[in-house]
Length: 325
Image (cartoon, rainbow, N blue to C red; front, side, top):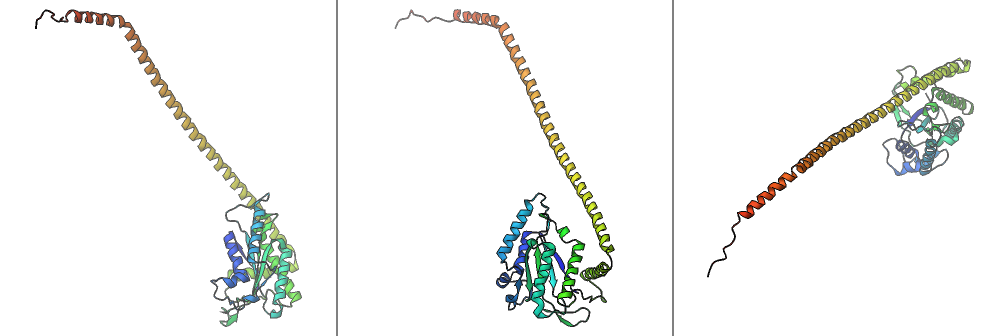
């Protein structure tokens, strides 16, 4: 069952590593962990715009910088910077029509998401390999596939959630289904693989096929999905408001803690100054009392000193000058 498979890259390192993996020239120069890459066929790989690895990385940096400098930048640490759509060639598509299919798929995606948001598209013909079909247990050859790497830019801001909403996934698959049916006379959704135990990816693709049938008959399904999305948007807004309230409370607590620490420091300084004042007053009082006592007893001490001095002079033995040699 064919289906556009969505994946996401968050950091610039991850995004640029995936771009390096897709780029034909870089793929020829570097080693890869994928053992199924046949470098003898890599020269036949295609790119949608023909941009080099350095040009794609430079475009990535410039678009991210523009989004970050916008009025509503998404600066979350877990933000998604690249959304990748991997599209296999439909079953039954003639090999001579594969390049045309790749170009037309790129045109439809650019019309839906905006060509200004497409970093580059790559068509790989060097990764075909045999695998064992889980249902038939027979060896099957994998199909060629294309990858288109978009910056999820909505109103000059990164918004991968809006970019890859369920309704957008459904619409992209319907667009590719219609294009394949009208222009290549093949089905993009074959409906195969429903009898055995299905993977999450297969269940998602089956759901897309069911929605397609409902979409062809009535618009009620789309209205239902829009209603659920509106409810989710309201819930998201409520959660955002709660997050903002919690952030405000945390900020208020931080301010209160700072004021409390400041108050403690001021009280400590006042207590220390008061203690120094008390000690200074005590010293001044002691000095004053000493000066007072010293002044009051000065006359008495002077008289005692003079009396003592006189006594010492009267008792001093004078030398005898009446002596002969």
